[in-house]
Length: 74
Image (tube, rainbow, N blue to C red; front, top):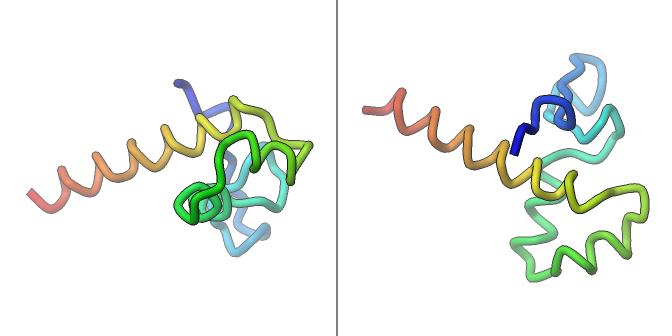
């Protein structure tokens, strides 16, 4: 999944946190919903402006970030 076209970081928006397509919903928000037990379908129903690709981009971004952190720690 190529998340670079979906995940955006703007210094003046949400404190520079990674957001979805320039909106004010962050990657962290989506991951927190999923971690709390919401299904992808429930997230999409609660936030109709999000797409399945947005959710997958959040997961890919988190996985890539985790991988980069592991390299730095090694």
